[in-house]
Amino acid sequence: MTRPPHLLYLAWGFPPSRAGGVYRALATVNAFAAAGWDVTVVTASRETFERYTGADASLEERVDPRVVVRRIPFAWPAQDTDVRRYGALRVALPPVWARLRRLADERPFPEPSYGPWRRPLAAAARAVHDDTPVDLTLATANPHVTFAAAHDLWRATGVPYVMDYRDAWTLDVFSGRTTTRPRSRVARWQATLLADAREVWFVNRPLRDWHAERFPAVAERMVVVENGWDPALLPPVPPATPHAGALRFAYLGTVTPKVPLAELLEGWRTAMSDGRLPAGSTLTLGGHLGYFAVPQGPLAEILADAASYGVRYAGPVAKAQVADFYADADVLVLALGTGRYVTSGKVYEYVATKRPIVAVHDPANATTDVLAEHPLVARVREVTPDEVARALAESATLAARQDETTHAALDELADRLRRDRQLAPRVAALRPREDS
Amino acid sequence: MSSTTVLVVAARHASDDAIEAHAAALRAAGADVTIVDLRPAGLAARGERSALRAVRETTDSWAAARRVTRAHRRMLAQAELVVAADRAAVPAVWRARRWNPRADLVNGVPGALQLLAAR
Image (cartoon, rainbow over all chains, first blue to last red):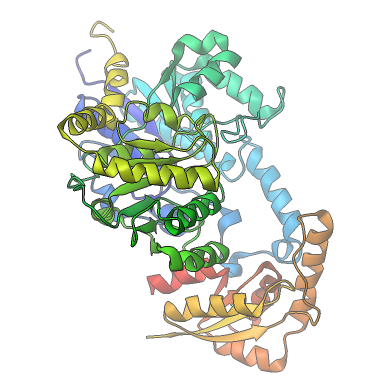
């Protein structure tokens, strides 16, 4: 090959979007660019993210300047809040409108809201290939329509594609239940897309194994590409200094209905009231409450009530302030919903801070594997207030136990869990052979 | 510079506290807020999701739009921003385009806050 290999990256969420998965997308394209590939990204317009997910212009500055980004429009009628654009049917009979909208969305591809994006995305992918031949397409989901567009290009031109599952399509990662019937359109689409893929990526082993069991013919092409933490996005956090007296506990992340907030706060109250935690200790929660810009009322009320026993809500924390947020903590609290297939991206960042961690999640979560070699983790045996109180007390002793051996182990683990370390082997393996 | 804003409320499950929380959020974002209350006389909890609830909410929204008075229309005509606090308020807000061709008409407080932040 006399020219650099050309990667086409298909993603809905890409900088300046602040939505989940954007950091993985950013790191992936940068890794390929750094390895000498030409990289072209096709993604949604900036206006899409400014309107629907929130945008962070500083993330766009993190994209390797060698990466070419092509943006195409994305219409999202269901999320449109401009009432002037509503038709009479939508106003008078919203459930009927919603049902018809969904049926229309799923005609080109069975994915509400995103199905209509299949044709423009596939057309844009084909235009990129016609401009400069593409050697490999890498599509990241969700939304899964990116897989379909990659497959469309493969059918038309033979360009191989990789499917990057940041989550699962037909598996509920919390309940472990399959979300679709075996002969449904979604199930048939997934089977077709997997069968024709060059490679399939999953963020953890349980997800990879679940899919390998159901698609054994594709199992050899299924690999784990874990998330990780990004040194470019998280400046070094000063190490925590062991000290006597009050401890500062901190949680960073969106508080969703899946997060065991009630158990965490009740456990905290117990540990504070019975003296297992030093007097004056605090628990600070940073991040959005719920999914909207306006904090969810009931969640805000719960936190306001907990202020009397040392719980504080710091509000959303801008990316530029995350390192400072961690620096102000002695112990980090990792509170997650229950799910065998759940890892979370936050755990890697927590490891990078080299602080003790209280793991408030089901031990069966895939997150447990990530923290298996972390020397300063206090784990609940089950997610109950009593267990949370016990683990919080245990973490207080861990906070005092930080020596050279511990620091060395933390350094080694943090280095191993860098995101670029997870991507490098796949980037190398996917490079076309020199004689092709 | 504050935006003259009308917050339209119509859901039978909307509490006074919830309405005040919405208004406070809008004021904090720079809006000068007036509330148009189209809630029915008999308030009730929202209830479980069901076809019956969907039908009731739809008919409630039609009834709410009919409760707009002349005084309400004057307020809506002068607003720069009209916000539907809940789904039941949407038809009333949609009708406001007849009396006010210029105002932004927004479904939901989060969308209104985004708009105010951008001004």
